Image (cartoon, rainbow, N blue to C red; front, side, top):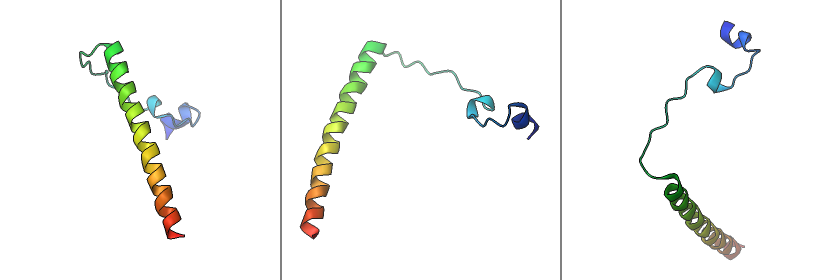
Length: 62
């Protein structure tokens, strides 16, 4: 509690626990960014498909 009081009761976790070093995976940033962006776009497409399916099933229940 003394440490929390010393930080004016701010509970931001970074004040109390250390952040480990980021693990290097060897993948160049540009490639990783492109890959992750493509994955995110695919997930958005799937999200829209599922949303339409859910809406259709809800309408069928009415």
